[in-house]
Amino acid sequence: MIEAHTGERQSGPDREARRREIERVLLDAGLLQGPRKLAGESPLAEGSADDGRLCAALEQLGPVFSGFGRYLATRVDLLSPVEGWELAAIPDRREALSTTEVLARIEQELGQPAGQVFAAFDVEPLEARLFFQAHRARLARGEGVIVRIVRPDAADWIECDFPLLPMLERVFAAAGRPGFPPEETIAGFRTFLAEALDLRSEARALTLLAAQTVSPSPLRVSAPIHDLTTVGVITVQDPGGASLDDLMIQGEAGREVAREGARRLCLVWLQLSMAGHVFPVEPWGPALRFLPDSSIAFTGGPFTQLPEASRDHLWSYLVAVSSQTPDEACTCLLREMTLEGPASAEEQLRLRLRQAVPFRDGGWGGSGESMAELLFLHWRFARQHGFRPSEPLLAFCRSLFVVAFTGRRLAPDRDPLLQAFEEVRLLTGLSQMTEGLDVRRLGESLERYAMLMTELPHQLDKALTLAAAGGLRPKPPEPREALRRPAVSSATFFAILLGSCAVVLLARQLGADGWGERLGAILFLFFGASLLRLAVRS
Image 1 (tube, rainbow, N blue to C red):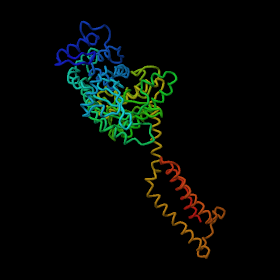
Image 2 (image 1 turned 90 degrees about the vertical axis):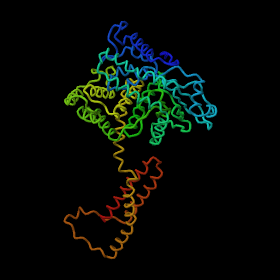
Image 3 (image 1 turned 180 degrees about the vertical axis):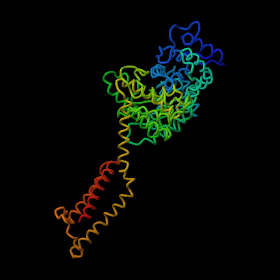
Image 4 (image 1 turned 60 degrees about the vertical axis):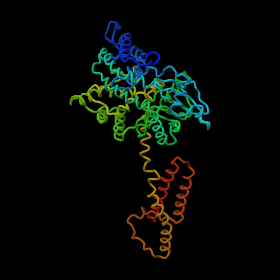
């Protein structure tokens, strides 16, 4: 039997005994119909907030039920933000493993004792989570690292409790949600958990993310140490910095720091997801570090990547939402959804999106509205009208909920997602505008242009010589002599040519970020065009 409150497993678990224990906990919490059901409405009734009973029950039932509650919190296509907010408060923590268990696990995974692998290893855990435990350590070369291990009882818990998760169906039915799709969400949770427990896959994602990150960037990636990484253990660079909890306890003095952290997190997440890079699916607090230089570091967790078509659809959707054009937003959103309801569902959804108001229809509460709340409302309405999200959209929705949840904790009086989106949109526009000024793309054109300008002095010299010898016949007089432009001397030509050369030399002194070269290219083209024009006029 599994003791729910400690997570300790006894030999030979009795599945039926565990079923009775789960039922007892749910009955005691008043979540099931029965003689001990508490009076009043059950949690998760449509549009109502959880009063804490379901969260307390899931926490009591151990890591699988707690983890499922936290996963369910991110399913904003099924639940309101208030319900998700309550479920997200389920603690992602457990009693720490003993030192003996930790050292045995490391030796089992890495093939040698921790004392031979690390120059120093802190046996006091950095964090003890539902399925993981992390420790700080130091390599022989002096580099600080974080060592995270999969808890040795994770597989036992999953084997025992996953077949019993459908018991929660009765909870949702009692709360007036008979159409709630527990089978689908349980399958999604199983897939997500399998990916999360494969730390070697996580190391590959971190390596790819590090390769995709171009300096300067507000993102710092904790690169994995592949020689010290297996399926059950991952070792990554320790980025330092502050945790989410550190930012939360700074009080009034740290409010601006927290607001900036919220904006930076949303900015980094949007840039990664919309640029086609890998991005974290659940960037909860323990996987985040806020560094002193205002950058964000991801230290782990499962990652995903959006296909190009999905990125285009979702970017157009976000633009339509920010522009307050619900019909266009609906068109873009439905490109990433499958209709499972009647044919009339699309027109009904369009009408509902035109009338959507988060404050009235189920947001986080308060007098204001945020971009995230409107997105959540769209996704939930679409689901209610019979549209199922694609896998890329679902991963995007879940990840956005975690980012928005964290941003709201750090800056409850701001809309960091909208602020970050406007910045990304501006940067995207500037990037597209300067794309044509990329020196690498203009290389061939500049090379041909430079060859032309190299020949220009020779052609000018020939023209001046010919003119001095009287070989050039004057043009017939024009009707309006006052509009004739004076000829330009050879000194002017050479002055402009020297200016062009000076610009090229100056560009090399303007740093390594590419802007000096671009500026030089622009000015070089300007001087060159002026020179050619003067040559033609002369």
